[in-house]
Image (cartoon, rainbow, N blue to C red; front, top):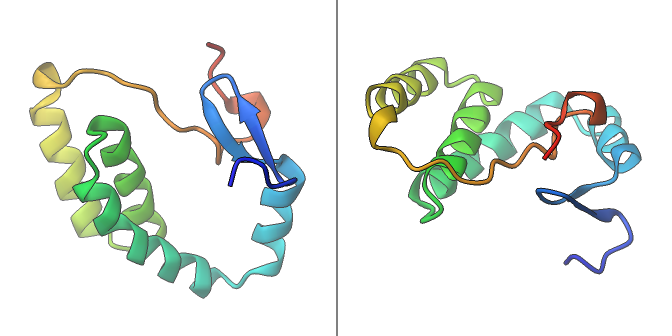
Length: 102
């Protein structure tokens, strides 16, 4: 997948080129994006990567409008924060000006 022309390597992983991301957001219906996020959330919740995957699940739940579930996940993450080992966080959906410098 990383060989596809619309994928770029970033210091913290792989992501869509900004123009591809913007084009997808402009052409896809909000309901389709919400449904995709709703379907992706459980996979992120079960992912072995841990905290970074949990953060992606939180994002997906929020986009999907599952605010109660998102709030519960956030609360559980905050309550267990001292026990978490930080890992790489995927910020590929952030605009370049908002991405962390690593």
